[in-house]
Each structure stands twice: as C-alpha cells, then as structure tokens.
Image 1 (cartoon, rainbow, N blue to C red):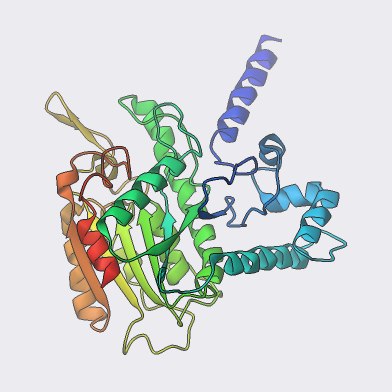
Image 2 (cartoon, rainbow, N blue to C red):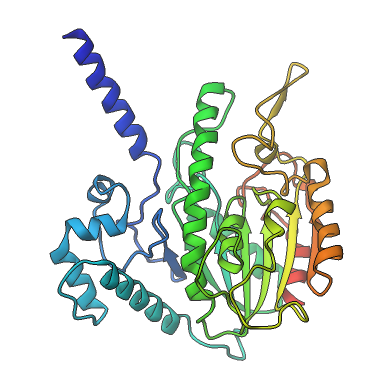
Length: 371
C-alpha cells in the first residue's frame, strides 16, 4: 500500500514536471499592437482563437493533437479562415497552416516610404510569456529590444515577434541538481527550435519585403539557422527573393558544426556567386549562461559550453567565433560575415533587463542591419 502511494505521488510529480516544460500560447492576449506569430513545440502556428492551456497540455502541448481531440472546434477555426473542412487529417491540418500564414502575409503589409524592411525577432530558451520566478518574459525582452533598435536607428522597420516553445523550468542558480534538469531541458528545446525554423521558412519566403532582418537571442539562433538553410534535413524551400540580414545575439549554438551546412539550401538562386544572406554574430566572452559555469571559492562550477548542447559560438569559447569567420573566408568567399564583440555587457545573458539591449550596446547591430 505504501509502495503504491509513493508511486502515485512520483507519477504526479513527474506529470506536473512535464507540464511545466512547454510554453503555451493558447490563452495569450494579442493587444500590444505588434505583429506576432506563435508556434507550438512541433512548429505549428497558433490560430487567432482562444485555446484553453490546460486542454492543450492534456494534448501533450501539441496543436495537432488538440485539433484531433476537438474536431468540432477545429472546423470552427477553419471556418474562421474561410476553409470548408469536414475532418481532421494531415492534409487539412496543412491547409489550416497555409491559411494562417497567408493571413499573416496580408497583415504584414508591403514596403513603403516610412517602412522599408521587416524585422523578425526570435527569443531564446526558457522564456515564459509572463514574468515569473524572477525570469523576464519574452514580451518584456522584445519591448526592450525594439526600443533599443528604434532609438539607435534612423531607418524604420516593422517588427514581427516570434514566440516559440523554448520550454520553461525555474530556475538557474547554484543548485546543481536543478541546473542539470534545465540543461537536459535545453536539449529538448533544440528539437523544438528546428521544428519552428522549418515552418518559419514558409513565411520568410512569402513576405512582401525585399529586405528582411532576422534578429535572434540565445537558442533563437537555431530557429533562424533552420529557417534559412538545412542544418537538419528539410524539403521546404529556402528563400531566394529576399535580402536577409541575420543577426545572432549571444547565440547558444556552435559555430563550424552548424555553418558547415550554410550553403545547403533548397533554392535555384545562384547564392554561391552572390549571396543574398548577410550574417553577424554578436558574442560575449563573459556570458556565464553560455559558458554554463560560474566561479566560486576559486573553482569553476558547471558542465561547460560543450555539454548539454554546444553553446560555444555566443561566448567565443576556444575562439569559436573567430574560427567561424575563418571558415567563411575559406569556404564561403562570396558571403558576408561580421563579428561583433559585446563582452562589455558583462556576465549577464538577458536580452533586456539591463543587459544586451542596454544603452548603446546594440549600436554595431543597428549599423549592420542598416547597411
């Protein structure tokens, strides 16, 4: 009896632990006036429809699973997007995604005298939708980033805020066992990042702007990477009709291991002769989150940047950023890369909260985006 009781308690704890991992957007309030897109862990885009987060958790945090469990509501959502759907199947799920994307493309608008580019912002790992447990939300991060970019730039852009399931678990600190759980969760978030990047391709290729900026923070870099080239195998077209400025702020990824696939793109465009992508890597050698260790009583604590997901590029560990630039000079001679040293930001890793978006820290980023 006692053993059964303990087993039930353990299952309850593990069940709730799994619930707290996914970041859900079914109950979001879209009232900030900005363009935004929300992706689940499988890369599916949320419709503009209220979905109870509890019911979504019960469907394993998957929109497609939730649709299958709620076929009548799925039909209602499809009707909202002017689709006459009679069943939940893979073909109709794809049709709904296309309809959501097409509606977004119309909403995003076109180039004008006042707005000459579209700028996609992609947050990183462990970002909740609302501030909690001392962790700043993705919404707050985006607000500070947008204010910084606008204050430093004379060019006007339209921002698109990308919200994806980068997972969440409280809290990084000096508890070694808790940190290990978070490190393991980081590995799961990488899978979500690739799935999101695959679907983001469909949007980047269709927007009605010739100039598109993709600005990322931390693990958001992996979302951008997969959206623009085949870091992981994909049959989805990569964009060829846009000039893409890619700016990776404190990227929680390796350098050479990923960018060896930089020219693996699904396009007929002759990018090897004149690349339509430009890349900037903003690194911080003092970022303790990317180093995955902290210094106390003369000892470095933590697994380091290679274990539980390689994060060497963003902190230039063992000259990873320098090595990446050398790779471009040897292998991608017609492609532009720029390294921006932002080690003056200190040990912090926050996009906002007095860190990367503070003061004129992003001045070199704005110069890259505007040229």
